[in-house]
Length: 184
Image (cartoon, rainbow, N blue to C red; front, side):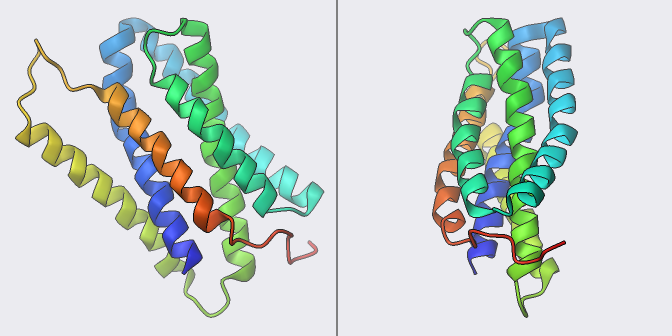
């Protein structure tokens, strides 16, 4: 059950991030948004490598996941704060995407090693459900509220809200096993 809750909440945050990123970056940075996207694209594969390497090397899961979640919150919050210096936003963008991948890698390893009889697909589907819920919430917000070019939707707020979901992820993450079970 802890994995179902974890992936549901994690994908609420991830969905909020992904839904807000392009409109936010285009809205606030125009042509410079390219660099934010590039930074994120560099950070994501790096995060999977770092997450796998650290868990293999240190044989740890929960401590690394808790640290990763704790670092992800300010990284995402800073990335969606448009009045910061652009180099800081770029740094937050690469760290954010890297940490998103690190945490997914660690949670997936923990799930594969300890899920027991629970079907993997059902647990991961809870993440898909979380992603769908946040997409629907954003759609309802955009269609019900009266936003226009003069008063655009504050996508920075949507991105920051996603960061708060990662705070909630700390609770189920605290129940994930500390050490790796497998020895390979």
